[in-house]
Image (cartoon, rainbow over all chains, first blue to last red; front, side):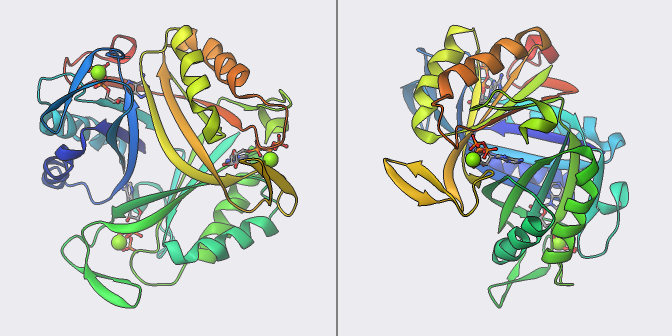
Length: 112
Length: 112
Length: 112
Ligand SMILES: Nc1ncnc2c1ncn2[C@@H]1O[C@H](COP(=O)(O)OP(=O)(O)OP(=O)(O)O)[C@@H](O)[C@H]1O
Ligand SMILES: Nc1ncnc2c1ncn2[C@@H]1O[C@H](COP(=O)(O)OP(=O)(O)OP(=O)(O)O)[C@@H](O)[C@H]1O
Ligand SMILES: Nc1ncnc2c1ncn2[C@@H]1O[C@H](COP(=O)(O)OP(=O)(O)OP(=O)(O)O)[C@@H](O)[C@H]1O
Ligand SMILES: [Mg+2]
Ligand SMILES: [Mg+2]
Ligand SMILES: [Mg+2]
């Protein structure tokens, strides 16, 4: 089981959600965050205006999926969130040891 | 060292906190989140009303514990947060390479 | 690739950010959180006043870095966030399988 974490521009959340739905993702957790990447001191576009990049609002997605689905999920997020401009975001994949669906008691791939 | 992550219904936070206290957990981090599981387009109960499930408010708990305690912690969270209704939540366990308690400099199991 | 996660006192965010900048960190994600450590039922100082520690506001930092940089990053955070008082925080290091920079398609260490 893998966890795909993505930090993206907030206005891209809907498009990414649709792209994830199309590759069969059945669960997503979203957190409001703020962050910066490499352009500290330079400018990034936010809501049509240029900001000197300190912390900008971002959205963090977490999607836990079977190993076999992880790459497709990464591609779906990257495809839907790419604008070609700085600040498009990052995707990190890590390993989950065990997963549990609380209502049913199902475990691991069956729990997702 | 393991990290137990749980996404639960917000109104269950107090009960889960008590259950964790009873199994000897000494630290918890909580984040507000929103999410959905498998019922996209169906309904989930929230504050007594039915909502078509898009994103619903959830609470994310993170608890870092010694390996030997992880299973008991998962069981405590599952026991306290289960209502039997859809949307009860998910628990994910992963591995932490190193832990540090900033004030004392203690590491790994001693740091928790 | 490693993920360094730190839960610190909110008023320390600026100092920690500067310390991270000095060790060459090029990206940070920050989330508001609340938490408690070992002093449940005892008191912790927050904004100059003493609180019985239930949940107190904390800030969670996530910094993804090449393996070789992880230890320096942990030391930078610990150095800048330590006050010597209870509640200084925790740092957890874990392993990231793959990283992607969405705009450029770069992967792993090149993506950070
Ligand atoms: N190394 C990192 N660790 C943790 N979070 C990061 C890291 N790099 C970026 N982020 C998060 O991702 C968000 C978007 O990063 P961003 O896309 O600006 O990365 P970048 O490397 O500067 O790429 P670009 O040159 O395309 O802007 C940041 O605001 C931050 O929240
Ligand atoms: N695969 C997943 N990846 C990330 N987060 C998830 C995943 N599945 C569920 N979640 C998170 O957990 C919350 C609760 O999920 P939920 O309990 O509805 O899962 P479910 O599989 O639909 O089970 P049930 O049928 O009992 O509702 C979601 O709102 C979401 O935040
Ligand atoms: N085991 C843990 N798992 C998850 N989060 C933790 C854990 N321990 C601490 N935290 C988070 O870190 C924050 C700060 O913890 P804190 O520094 O009070 O730890 P402590 O062990 O009580 O050390 P001290 O005695 O110096 O206060 C907590 O509010 C919580 O958000
Ligand atoms: Mg950038
Ligand atoms: Mg559900
Ligand atoms: Mg404490």
